[in-house]
Image (tube, rainbow, N blue to C red; front, side, top):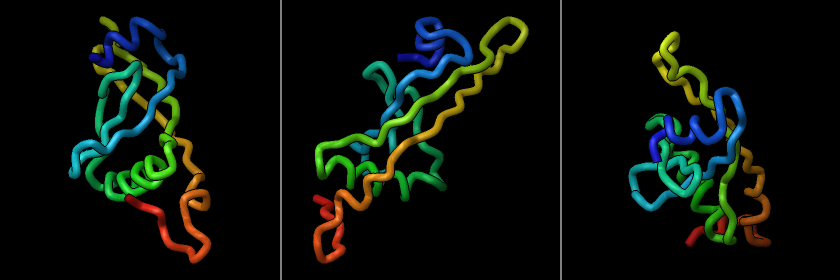
Amino acid sequence: MHIARIKALVGEGVPFPIWLETTDPDLVAVLAAGDTVGHILAELSDGWRREARLAAAVGELVTGEAKIFGGTSTKPSVGVFGKLHWSGRAAVVDRFGHDRLP
């Protein structure tokens, strides 16, 4: 789904849910409304790839929210600003302190 379609559904500046997926070994995809809407920057992707895999190992997702600004005749550029919520690292570490990564 193109980000403009999501903006049409939710509006400008309105938070909408996002989550991460790591189906590609080199990319961390950001999904919204069931489709990829972007990717985590390369310099940040290693850490988030690990977190997304840890979450998946226990049947969870790294989730967050994003907002879209711009994309109008007066502001043709679209800015997407998001934040992720994941504090589950402790929940996916075994009693010996080892990650339960598949």
